[in-house]
Length: 264
Image 1: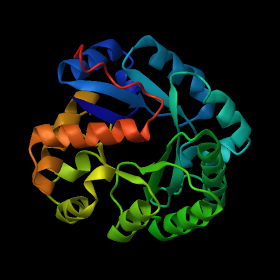
Image 2 (image 1 turned 90 degrees about the vertical axis):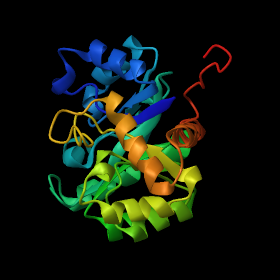
Image 3 (image 1 turned 180 degrees about the vertical axis):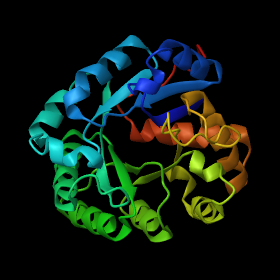
């Protein structure tokens, strides 16, 4: 069994065939999927999707692109919404200096709000970080000093130091289809050095489809391709990487029930 720790099933790309996409993932052995919130104001749509499928869960949070639009979202509101049984994470939140779609101070403010919610709930914070390694490391170190919180550096494509800081602070590192790209040798070298007990896989679907689907719409079933390359990268079998990453997933996403092994 594999899991897709990060996808966006609410995006328009999937609207016409969402049930078929979930069915294809399950047929491919993807036993759990987490569809990730990018706007708290669209939370109801996200949670309705999670409620519609037994193996799909969701998060609640504001993507850094949308930070300026949702600065009124408080930690109290995030905590309240996370009480829904299908909400298993906070975020995604963080810093994106590549697109800079929101002022950087707004991104940082929103990020710290989400950290507070993760700390209070004990739910993992799904972190988006792009071209912001130094500020991200600084905020993580500062906030961890105020009290630890679980987190995942999702769709990791940053530098080695941020991976090391994240791991040192107790975080997990998740790899997407980017890991499979020919020009990602440096990223694979970083992945090889992440402790096995902190590794996760994801799709970030509908984006970043792995080889051999690069350039096409991504979907949760394709996490198998990323897992295969991660297995090769760290020198284990595909069965072992499934066991490693799935075990890590359930240790981090503690609100998601583990499958009944006897029944499975």
